[in-house]
Amino acid sequence: LLRLPYITAVEVSKTTNSGTISMEKHVPLANMQQALGTKYAITENGHQAMDEPAKSWLATYKPILLLFGLITAIALIAGYADGRVNGTTAMRVFMSGFFLSFSFFKLLDLNGFADSYSTYDIIAKKWRGWGYVYAFIELALGFAFALNLEPVLTNGVTLVVMGISIVGVLQAVLNKRKIQCACLGAVFNLPMSTVTIIEDALMIGMSAIMLASIV
Image (tube, rainbow, N blue to C red; front, side, top):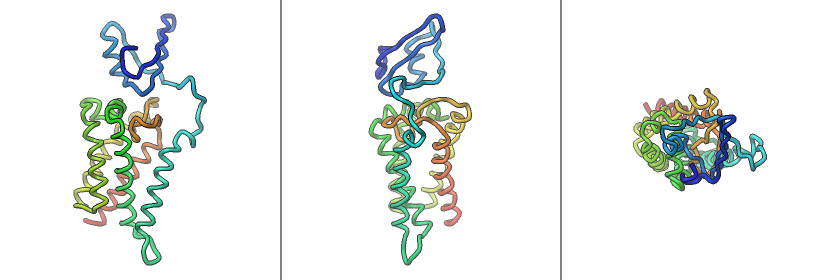
């Protein structure tokens, strides 16, 4: 296991058939199993940063909450005109900011994102390359919403892509798997939770509303 990138220390107990693995960045379980070969089997039993104190909910999700707050503020300002907020414009700007910001963090460490995403996404589990494609789809959607290009196609793709994405998120949360959420790439160590479900559901809801208003 120590031969794998990002793994810094491994302590194994034959008595309890368990081990503690320390790593600089998240390493998928599949990669560890591949390194072990067929002689040993490894399963996830939850992970905890032993050298860090437990963070509060607010401290844990501070990056994503700040990002959502800034994007929301920009969307409301952009949609404000004649004493009221144009909901369609505000949603379009919000979705543009969402996809551009989130794709930016994914592109900072594309390999790390692809590794993390492959641990729970239903497509990336079978084809790791989907993680690379997904990041660029988000980037393209961000520009498409910003330029208001082909609204029907843009919102339709958003509905499909985010609909597929939320399936893996729901499975991970409902099964109480303690894994890293890849929504902000591999830059921030955010745990998978209902916050991720809300994030995906919000984008699905907005794209559905905008599609309905267009069609």
